Image (cartoon, rainbow, N blue to C red):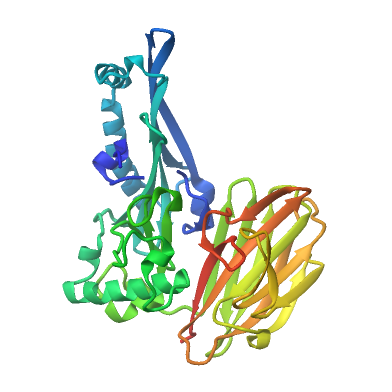
Length: 418
């Protein structure tokens, strides 16, 4: 894959991210973006050939933390230095010398968008989204994460975070959670999940997040281009046995009895999940949904891959929804890909509403008891907004973890309370 301007300085390959928010609200509201662009066009026979390059990077106002922002600014300076050396005019004449003067190509471009993706007590993660077109059947798009300590040490890699013995265990652990995430049995071929072969490869591209390590495979790395990108989360609680107490990941060793997780989709809405431990084997979960669009029909759905029925669910309450329904395993549920009802594989809990007032939020709350013998609860969450034939989803239909209905889902792991 073609390398980005920022990649040359810091990254390997790399869009401003929609989905789970891994930075605190005050950082989200402070993060703005500066965009700079250079372009050169040259007449070629009956057309004009243009080369365009764009760089976007974050600015923070007000500054939430001076030391961390200074570290980020120093890292971003390297990207700006590389961008300053880029010459669109040279790119155009290079294309012409390569024989494109007689083609129908009229524009090539590269676009790099850098953002602060994640903050933890000890680390920060920058995300670079790199897209472009330089001829051919389609353009390119890649995502890359780079991790640093909040005092600027890094980049942090698996080799710097784990010793050789821990990395050996790590790969086995990662494959276990990859298979759990995508519904593959322990010995099922990865080819069934569209991999090129049946050998698990751990992505070197990952983000350190408050909830665990998020691994990202770009197109073509493990699957065909049509399969797109693949992500999965290796949760923090699963890593505790192999974390060095002196590692930047040592904060994972401290259990928490309460979680607040934010999901956001641009121009659609936000979804917050709050979970509070109740005793040693249960959580009270509250999902709060806010819409940025006027789509009166709404569905908020939670699936439980570990449950066949609703026996582990109690104290269900809703605010703003008209109905709450249970769909146990083997109950017909609509599948958007097959365009018909199929028997569900596991429990689905769904709240629906036919109205949505301006600035209104809706809630679904319940108590979830962890299945016996499990170390965590696995929840898959999505929201659907519909007006007439227009449908908007959180996450985007093609993002997130594909659920039993063909929609994308947010995934939330809740570890057994300690």
